[in-house]
Image 1: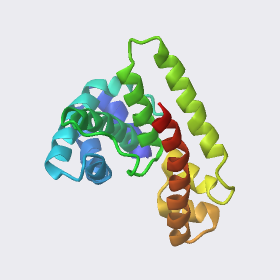
Image 2 (image 1 turned 45 degrees about the horizontal axis):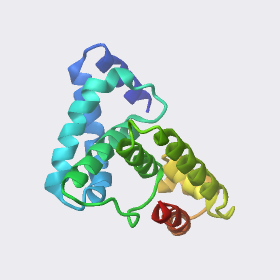
Image 3 (image 1 turned 60 degrees about the vertical axis):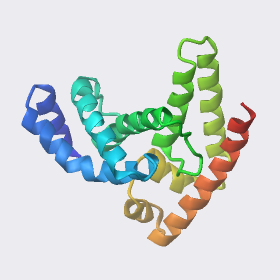
Length: 192
């Protein structure tokens, strides 16, 4: 992470090689995460990732460091993927894992649809509250796993160490937490 911060600062100062190193360091991880979100199509995923690279390069000065670079890049790519899927008359499916980036993407997608509509803020706030409430209602055995993996971006191994669990237990609990969260949000989204 410290190396990323140095590379980001250098890239912000115009060092294109630093940005290339950042890109090389994170592109495979982002590609793998994005592949399912883009409908499992490697060509579409590659195209979206290339667009994300250009957008990230142009917007690098806006990167505040609130998330790690890979998460920020994934968020940009995820937004582009949703737009690409929308153009192909596909709909976002709640069957995809619902993690923080995807949850944010759902919020952004809903907001984009109503962007100039005065109801957009009300929808965004209501959905954000429902997501927070749904996470808070998760059982104590599931909530920390979801928060560490999906909200803080820790790996399965890091989460397991932090919580004193096996990696298999983390995966099982994460799957169950996502499923419960998905069920709670599906009811809300279906009613809209």
